[in-house]
Length: 331
Image 1 (cartoon, helix red, strand yellow):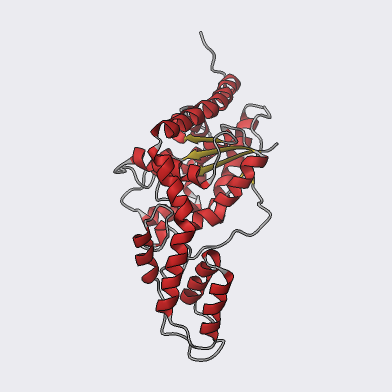
Image 2 (cartoon, helix red, strand yellow):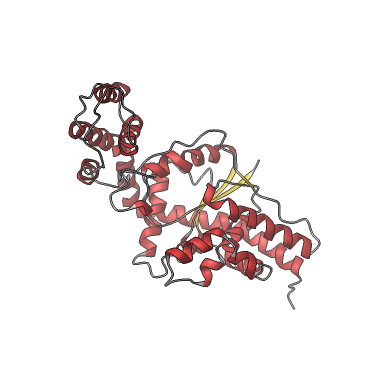
C-alpha cells in the first residue's frame, strides 16, 4: 500500500474548484492508500505572516474537509503545527540545502515579485518545509499540481542527498500521484481563469456561502452582448458560464440554454437566475453538513487530537531514526 501525503492551506474556504479538483481524488485515495492529509498552517505564514485569526481559519478548513467526506478513521487528517517533528526534520534538511538551488526555485522568484515587501526566509526555504512534510512520513506518492512539480523534484533531491551523505537507503523517492483521469476544470465567475480566491473577489462559489451571497455572485458573472449569428463560438466568459451550468444543473437545463445561445435567443439574465438556483441547490447539502459539524465542538476537537496522535506517532519514529543516522545520541 502506497503512503500518500498532501497539504491543505488554511487560507480561503472550500469552493467548487477544490471539490472537483484534488478533493474528489482524496476521497478515493483514502480508501485505497495510507493517506496523511494535513492543514498547512506553517506554510500559510510565508505569505500571510500576521493572520487575523489563524486558529479560526484552521478550524474552518478542518470542518469543511470533514463535511466534504475526508474520514479521520480511514486517513490521518492533522494540523501541521501539531507535529513538531516536522520542524525538526525541516531544520535537518535545511542544513543540507544550498542557497543557490533554493534561489533558483520558480515559486520563490514568483513570490518575491508578488510580495517584494515580504521576502522572508520562509519563502526561500519553502521547498525544504514541503520536503519535511513529505519525508516525515516517508511518503511514496504526492498529489501535486503543475506549480508544485519542481518542489517535489527538490524533495527527491533532499531525500537522496541525505541518503548519500549518511550512506543509507532511508528516504524513498516520492513520485507524483497519477490520478488516471483528467481533473474537472471549474472556471471562475470573472470571465477568465480558474475558480479561486487568488483570482479576485467574487470569483469563487464557496460551500459555506449563504444562498443570497451565491445569488449575488452569479448575477455579477461576466457576460457579453450575446451572439450575432447562429452557432457562433462562445467567448471564454460565456463558455465559463455554460461550464458551471453543466456541472450543477440538469442536462435538460443546460441543453435548453445551449439551444437558446445557438439560435441567438439567449437571455443571460434568465440563464444566470437559473444557474443561481441550481448552484444554491447543489451546495445546500454540503452547507448543512458544514453547519452541523461546526456546531459539534467535541467532535472537531476529537478529530484534531486523533489526527495529531496518529501523525505524531509516525513522525516521531522517523525523527528518532534520522537522529540516529546523523549521530545524535543521548548521554
